[in-house]
Image (cartoon, rainbow, N blue to C red; front, side, top):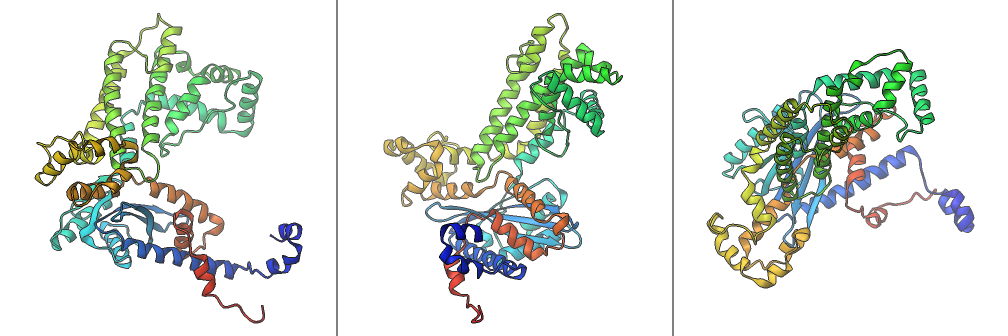
Length: 478
């Protein structure tokens, strides 16, 4: 700042020098700005006329303190959707369903949230979260029942479920060889540098292999794709190092590698479609349904040796037409994957009609709709003006413009569904920010300061700097 001031406005350099940047001053400013944003959130939650939803996830920080993230998404009467960090709650002892429930109650009390407006709760599949008896969901349902209220819609993070479905494709015969070869290359610095130089001399498309990390959603697909594309180079390098891996030249193993590479890439595409902030549950559900259709199509095509949607497998088939394709194992893998998706997302399919009604009320079946929606749907589906105005990519704008006196129940349903978190992606993203904020070098960062720093890192609200400065009084000595 001083350097810029000296070049741009040297006459004001003293004013810049007067700005205090001491540790205590910066700490105080972060606290005040964070408190200002939280005060704005408290005001904003009062505008949630009918519904709000919560998304929760828990993770330990660098000091092994369990941190519970609670995000809120609410909607106002004019369909303004607000998605913000409601709280970062630190759990010093156990992390049972009771502990989490107590923290959720504290958060709702501080934000003065009405339990009757709670539309849904989105969590991962941990027992402390989803347990019917002792978990958070079970305790929330009992609390709402005690208050004479309806239980909220519970959503198991769709991204988490998709990642769990991928685990049925263990395929150890492929993964163990791939991981072993990668670890051999990258375990020692000299060998790793020699491999990189080897690829450079061959003018290879890629400059290195990738480490496999099981907990990362997209890791397996990317590792397999890179390994498959560098397979000749990897095999040649291993021979130079007197390491023989017979699987790398085994035709059947290559089929398995190519097939697994293609399928994991398709799964990665679905994962990427489900990621992102502010996603509507109807859009995420459409991706799930589309994937199930693709999976069924893929299964039938593989049975007929048709690899049109499997590029690596197709290339291998073209290069080695005489080598038989191991159809039995590949078909079995796809059938297992299809069955797993059917089981994992069965709970979501129960709410298909509600989601579809929200996504496109013009194609909803009036006979199957709830009585409170039937007359309104009949009116809506025969209104040409509204039909022409409907655009699926601007769903919220459409419902915001819908006359409240004519379609009150449909509009209310849309408000509820628009608040539902389809995943805990926002929590995962915030935990990544937490790792950058609270590092081993900053492990003394207090829970309160971590909360304020995280809030400022992820908020979409603008702090009222003018109000904050008007409340400050400069010392006369300054």
